[in-house]
Image 1 (cartoon, helix red, strand yellow):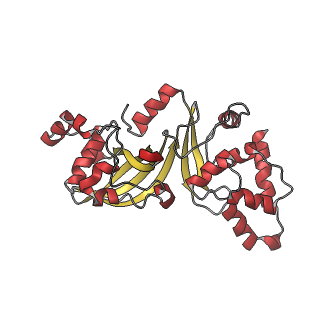
Image 2 (image 1 turned 90 degrees about the vertical axis):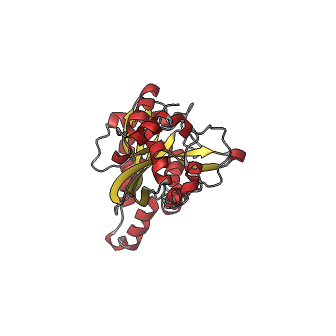
Image 3 (image 1 turned 135 degrees about the vertical axis):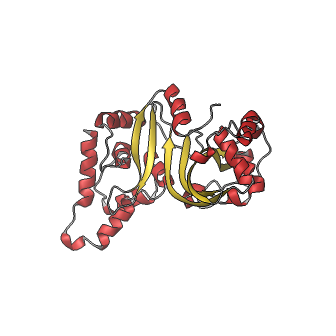
Length: 291
């Protein structure tokens, strides 16, 4: 029933005369598009005084809507295989009147996945960086690299890799380490992490950009290779987000660039898991080191 209400909600947006199509259509699509991950958080949390809610209040004053109308609209509705039963259970849990679940930027259990093009020893390669928000002193935050994945970062039976593996502990930095001089701004996600090339340009200070906690071998190897200028950053090809904040669930958020009311940053995968399975997922899929 909840998703029938959601469909009705969308149909109401789509109902207009032919003469209104063009400008009003563009305005409506733009208003409904989830433009940024911050926008996704705001709609998920049913935050007041956002551009989306202001648009609805102005254009559809007759609508009575609640959070249970908003959350279903954050799912990708096209070509997905998320079970309706799982969607219903998830939404019911999130909007629970006694223990509702909200998302916060300062949460430690959400990650950005950057699919990147780089050059390794002069040859084009693909590399994935996993980013997370890390708190600094005085309630300050920054984005840090918590993991890296690439074929050329895997362990190989060479002297250099053997030495790096043996001394991996020295690569790890205590969480109590001095605050970094160089950092990725806390709003890096708002500019699609276009500043991540600074990590490789300021290679002498690369540790400032790395998560101050356990590190995988691949991340330590990336640090070593970057310091030697053997890896050079090219560009970010794609971005996805993984949200672990809701008990029993993992959300994957992808960007859907299309002329449609259901567009922008939307839930593309909803994975039902327990807490132990979440840790396994982080290690196997995101290559995040255990604490």
